[in-house]
Image 1 (spheres, one colour):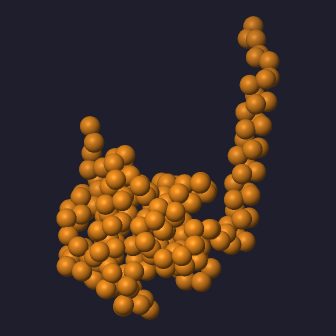
Image 2 (cartoon, rainbow, N blue to C red; image 1 turned 180 degrees about the vertical axis):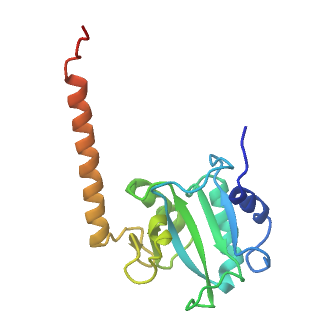
Length: 190
């Protein structure tokens, strides 16, 4: 049985409008087919950010929403509505975010980027972890990955490379430790 959280109910209620006409919610949401209603953030989740010009917002969101619901992008997407404003933000643009479950999974991050480019998105795209957002990291230096305009190649900043190396080294160490435990003789209880 699928249960609805307040967050999932918010997603469900907001998916029928377009960003330029939404007056009650700051975000409109779309889920991929394999996303349970009660699913909230993943511990390693992140998102591609596209700061969309207002003149393209509704049409762009329709394409992103459809691609997300068809399973071509990440597990969830959202679009900022006209009431979604932050201090010091550009009032001529709104964010559209496309989420992936694991920012360490470069193949999946790359797959989503390639599909975003195939939809015709040619602007610079930034990828940011949800943990950075929760810690309040915004602006210069907050991006985990960068996709230059029109490119499908990932630019990986130094801090991300170091974090990925640490992550992969820790996983390799855990695999080695598990292999040693499997090979160790079992102790006999007397």
